[in-house]
Length: 238
Image 1 (tube, rainbow, N blue to C red):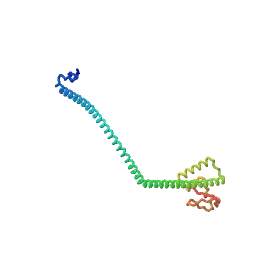
Image 2 (image 1 turned 30 degrees about the vertical axis):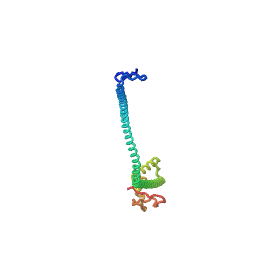
Image 3 (image 1 turned 90 degrees about the vertical axis):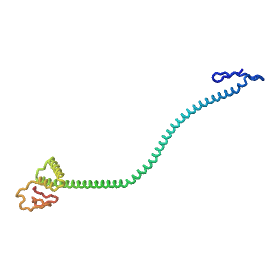
């Protein structure tokens, strides 16, 4: 006997053929064949559905992955476009800056030339001021030498020589007055001589001719009547 299990727990019993024996139920074979065929088809359909479900799940996963890849590709493309735009913008910016520099070279050169001229003018002005100051100092030195000569002659006439401190104070006062007077050395010199020369007596200059000094100052007679070489004339105080 040959037993086969069929769907839903049914057991199909078949008689094994031996030799020339015939089956006891010959009409049962077509029905069994159809039933087996239907069962096989149902199993295949179920397998195909399971495969289809698995494939649909994989397709869904692939679609989601493809969407992510598309988004990443879009971001990469946008970043590449931005980088390309930046690369193209840099040369254009450099060209624009070069044109700007070339256009501004003329004005820059003019400004530099003007600044140089101003510096040269100021330098020459300062040099002229320094030369004037040196000339003024030379004149002051000459006046000091003349004053020293006058004082030396006074000492020779028999007057008591002043002390070194008095001479130093007199010279410092003279220099201060020369600075305050802003170059009016003639007036300073006349004042110094009036301080150094003693007032003459009334009968000392009788019978002597007056000696005129340049600049229209007062006429003062000489005690000896003759002006020596290198001597300065004496001027009365106003």
